[in-house]
Image 1 (cartoon, rainbow, N blue to C red):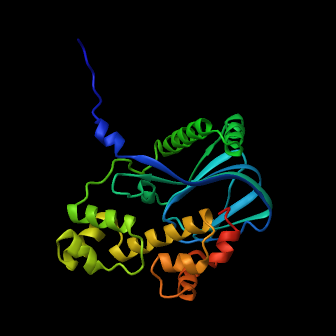
Image 2 (image 1 turned 90 degrees about the vertical axis):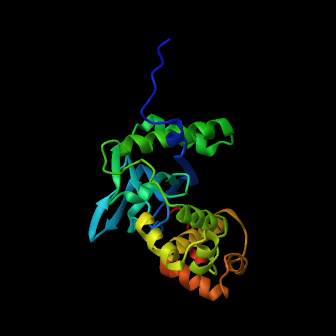
Image 3 (image 1 turned 120 degrees about the vertical axis):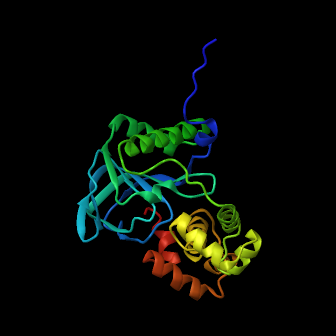
Length: 267
């Protein structure tokens, strides 16, 4: 018997998963305008028609119709269109088993020409209610992302994290609240605050506080998009002292108030 095995283990493959946070088929006009500041997740757009563009580092870059555009997490930009825009959009995270978004490692956005027939079938799946079709759509998105990453400098291999970082990230993700402190995390991980802060920054590329903010506002986005909870209820759930403070922090991060964000969900 001859058995050939890959140098990549099943465990390594299974550690990486694609999470779909939101998706849709959108037709809009000049109201598609806003700022995306240090987002926690990536955006994948297929531009069906129109003249949308993004502004990044002082440069205006068109999002070409008939092309897929992948804008990674942590990539801040301004978006708008001159007259109109039709797109398929997917908000995604390519995560390892600690919840680290691997697409955060990109320095800029990626583009590739798309198949219009595939895009039409994906739009049809988005409009229907068939679970099997949506699962196929998820796999198509995963394949597109992997194809776009081929030849790019973005490493897919998950990083190896210290036990204290793994425990801290797991707790932050399961308890997204602005009231969580580094001291509490350090006690949970059985290390000093200094050790946790230093190790976290070295391995994650951001401080525990930045990661906590990222997870809190990611949860805020999902609650605004997916629920009818009031701003007061969302503020309370995430541990803010009052909804006004929550709204100020949200506006500073996204350039929109929570109410505006809920109304303009196609970003």
